[in-house]
Amino acid sequence: MKAYEEDLGHIHSVIVHPNRASTLPSKRLIYIPGMSGTADQSVELLEGLDGVESFAMSLRGRGKSKAPDSNFTFDAHVADVRMFLRRIGTPGYFLHSYSVSTAFVLGALASGDCPKPAGLIVGDYPARYSKLSAGWAAWFSTLTAGGRPTLESITLQDMEAIERDSEDKDLSSVLKGFDFPVLIMKANGAAPAPSPITAADLDVYRRELKNCRVVEFESDHFFRDREREKYVQTLLDFMR
Image 1 (cartoon, rainbow, N blue to C red):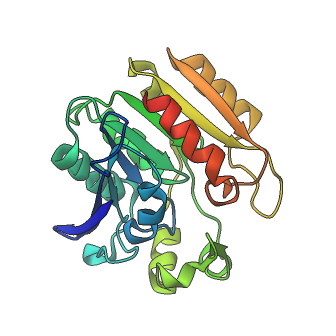
Image 2 (tube, rainbow, N blue to C red):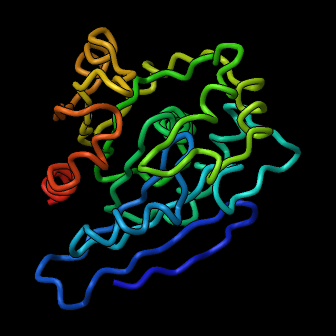
């Protein structure tokens, strides 16, 4: 597979083209990483999706993406994702959010002017965005994700801006309008990073979505790295 980089305004993205020798029909996947994930860090994962043409973006302030005016509001994130989907999305594409990017993806799809995906894959996050507690940035800056310190992907200053600009948003009403299948990936492991999806959150997805499937993983919120084989196979099965 070959990976290419592309800048769309202040948003950095990568494109991973499938191996031409693949025996699988080509699919298109748009992947939006989580709080500290980046497009560049996603390449190894996306290269493992045989027969899939994949696109990933870094959220504003993460990786090589810039953050105009240090604006990290919910609406600013949604506008970035919306722009990316309008630019990259084509009929039949699949959309995969992971962790907090789920909230921004739901917000973008709610706008009504993004190409409709053939299916949505939610990576372990509820249908809401939350106000971050005081001190979140200092705590988050000490963590690692995928074996990488978060400070490799985002500065402490930008984390503090995310904390400052965060707000509570209930996005459950958006789900009613989805007429495409949705896969919910949920972590069951408690440590070190338990799933942000509660039993009540899962009930919301099952109640509001017309076509909902749930796949559970034994490990914690970072099952993408800890159970890579199952994770990749679950993605490929859903896109068939």
